[in-house]
Length: 503
Ligand SMILES: Cc1cc2nc3c(=O)[nH]c(=O)nc-3n(C[C@H](O)[C@H](O)[C@H](O)COP(=O)(O)OP(=O)(O)OC[C@H]3O[C@@H](n4cnc5c(N)ncnc54)[C@H](O)[C@@H]3O)c2cc1C
Image (tube, rainbow, N blue to C red):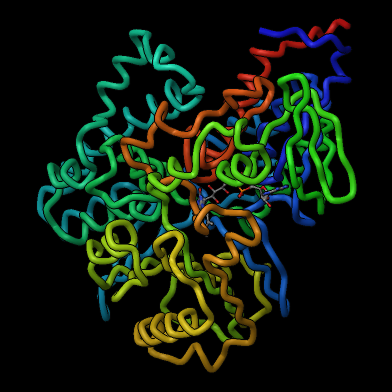
């Protein structure tokens, strides 16, 4: 523990980036009394969850699934705010639709009894199996999200207390997710319903530990929510909290280097200025912070370390404004009418553009009249692809046609002829906008070898006052984990550099 020879409010913390993790860290640090400033590359906060407006449409650029509402509640509660006063939240019902093939869809009801009825019709006995599966998933969710998730994972000793060890045993770290799900269900449609959260959040089900059934509990039991106005409203709410706590925000402020003196990180260098800092937190992509902002001797990890890492997928995205209503879509629509395993193989094992991809369509205008002009539809289309794959306009256009063919076949009318606004976003954009290593969308894959203590550590090994937060560190990818990541790093700083607030 080091005491800072300064009055509380003059301990300056510079936070690089304005994504969820940085914003969260900044809020906790400001609340603890540090003078905290965010330096964000763009003219808006939110990082991967930015939004943009075009032709009367408002597009969320990244996250669209509001899962784990309790994490958001706790975050805002920590600062004395009620999430219900900051966000206008709706429980979506159905939570989402799975499209298995022509005229073959499954709407996933929010109501548990209705959901079990749907499952039972597919596979007799699966309603009971669902209850047993969810009892186990709930235990994992409680242990994972309460006892383990706020562990800084700097030392294995953190796991050496009885409660945590008992919890770890329940988490089934060594059982693959796909094998675990098959203990409960056999019907292919139910298996795909259960496997999709892990596939989309970053690893194939055979390489993901069974602990991630906690995601099924989050998605199916706690429900799929939506903040009116779009997911970026969460960012705006956090910005409000940050400002109320005194966090300063510098937009259009890309950090080009972290300089050090006397064995400590001491300055953030930007194009037009240099700022002195007592402590630095980087919420920019971990690889970028290490490989581009620090000198070689100060990096925790070498280029070959990163080459060995399994990245979660990148994505090909399309933001479309359509000047008519699109039939037969829900708010969230998963097109699982092709083989899961083949697509996963083409993302993780032999990375290439997928031969027969599954994809996801979000149509927020189905439940939110503010994101599209009247009579129009806002479409966000996401196709997961291998990180680091070659990305060019011709390939994007080819996949646009392929997706449109399947979508139009499903809705039985033309969409292409009604597109009044179109923008694509892919690997190159992730690299350019976020300095994302290999253009990753969601950080590291959730494999056992990249879990907890095996993730990139939150502290620099050479510069004791340099910390990392964000989806590439603990606890991992997703909006709720990013909020927790900020809290974890802030708690570590408070522990190592306590302030005497009486000063
Ligand atoms: C397409 C997509 C869909 C997703 N869907 C979901 C979903 O439905 N639900 C869910 O929970 N999660 C989802 N996620 C994941 C979730 O969005 C991320 O895990 C989370 O937003 C990551 O937050 P972060 O703070 O770690 O990183 P980021 O959001 O990337 O923030 C990092 C910030 O640092 C800034 N920065 C980078 N370099 C510098 C620099 N040198 N100087 C200054 N600033 C810099 C960047 O501009 C950025 O603002 C999705 C992600 C994507 C991309």
